[in-house]
Amino acid sequence: MSIAVPVDAGLEHHGNNGLARGMDHRIIHTCGHEQSHHLTGFDSQQQRRADWLKTTLCASCYRAEKAAESERALTKAQGAIAHLTLVPLTGSERQVSWATAIRAQRIAMLRTACSFTSAETGAALLGIADAKWWIDQRELTDEQLLERAGATPLTAR
Image (tube, rainbow, N blue to C red; front, top):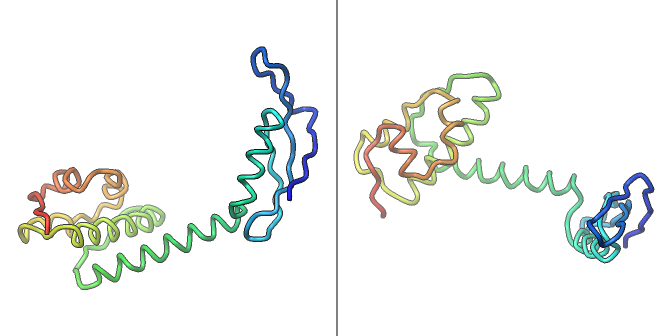
């Protein structure tokens, strides 16, 4: 269910097609929570967006679901590398917290997808203590990450 309430201050001009109004819609999401959304555009666009929003979780439930999903992934990754000896990370408390998750996930993923070709490859990654380094390298491919760490390339399993 959505209830549309016109918002006079939210008038927008869309080219030569006339005026489209902004409307506040009260949406009941799939989680059962009701949330207000400010939708703009023509009536048909607003209705299409409102219909889609009804099929999603509210913002709070979505954030909670994503946080739980991240926590499960981190726990799984930490379990996969628990037997490894990792150097403690250095940096601010927030950097260390974030980098710990990045490092655990990346090393677990590398160990699952490929085998280290030498002890030096593993040692190169396991010995990086700078939290900022892990954060800065988080979006690199596996090959780029190993190259930046000064490690030898991986071979696929």
